[in-house]
Image 1: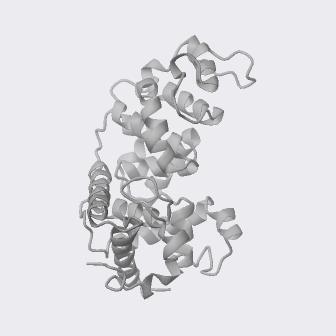
Image 2: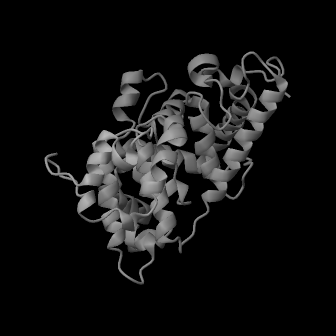
Length: 308
């Protein structure tokens, strides 16, 4: 098992590869390449800026994190970013409006409110919008909105949603907060929200787990030569999440971050962009899947590939 310092060296190469190669268009064009690199740096800076912990975060701002992350769970990030969020923000951005008979969700599917029916069939206010009509996600959002509407007056929204231990720094408090949120929005989605509001974690999605596994960084739960079916079978298990988060915390303390105020968020963003398919943030080609498998990152020579 490499040390956190050695892992940080590998991370720096991963970050360089994303900046130099994942943003490189085909056919190569210097101006487009520079624009894509600027977009990647700007988006990275923005997500790190947003991941600044605020104990007094407003209910409205916390809500935006919650409903948007529910939409992202299990869907392609580019689709959600480019279609789901723009289409649904006018409707879902105000949790207090997601109430009343029109938003009644019938588990049996026979007596939905009119707004729920419109969502599921793309009619009414949803006509002509491009979004995924997943029933489970809608129900999760409506249940979470009801919880937000019932927040006790005078209580910090952070504590109302995550519990009174949300402001404590211990690992035990972190996982207690996570358990409370997971009961509302799901295991991985809760971690996604917690990461994006500046709590001490990353989101162990399939790409993060796959890359860390193949690098040999989480061999306590997955061997470096684990088959894809094994990775997919255990990436959502609690012990995998804990191992990934613990390792990411250790590595983030050793990296030379471009955004020193949020190194853990930077680590997550870069690792995921290395693995994800093209679609946003200036990423125009997949590295791990199509061009530079993560196991070969230490063999990559930026100079030979047109790097700066």
